[in-house]
Image (cartoon, rainbow, N blue to C red; front, side):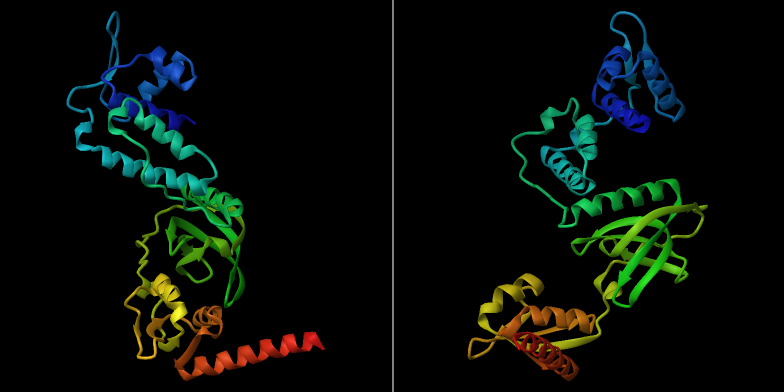
Length: 305
């Protein structure tokens, strides 16, 4: 793509004192005429590029506009690379790695030793997630609305939105956009979306607020749970809520108290702990657990008859 090539050429010019059209043509596997047009486009975009002919000539950026690479330390570059590589783990391609290879050109002095940080943002849904991310990215770039089937605890609905942000949060991917069904901005979880298609162009002149992704905003506390856990579940509490979420009782059991956002989510989590937990309050959660476990027991008892 032309934009990738322009970024690559600019990266090389920022890092090397001088290069030539034949060198760039060979590097990007295009003709010298194409490179000359690219240089002209960069100049038109306001990049102060200087060209000189003859022996010792070439293409360079005017003095005073070159990036001072001394502002980047080896650690800085390692952190940049780790972040960029993490995007490839969900994109299903090597696009970002290839982009960083262009940026790294001539900067080997900044990259020393082996990588010490590896970030993998992929999930069990990688095969279905990567195409969704690409479709939404394209829609944002083209200013296209997207339509999709959405599955939520409140039921299945067909939605059409103006997408504005792709977000990775709470170990999952979301899209934030203006929903025509709700006439407001909403956050949608990609794993609950199906059949995503581009629909129509939009002007893009809507005032878009930055999404408030604080836990208090997205998952406002509904109530507070108090429960007693078996000592064997200490690792589970530490992993989910931290070491300060419980206190050890005289008999070794763990007293847990915490706010929660919705009953269904709490019930699912409590049930995953099997018989290693006893809920003290709220009373409606105790009653719901009794109802659910009774129905489960009845179902499996019926299967044995």
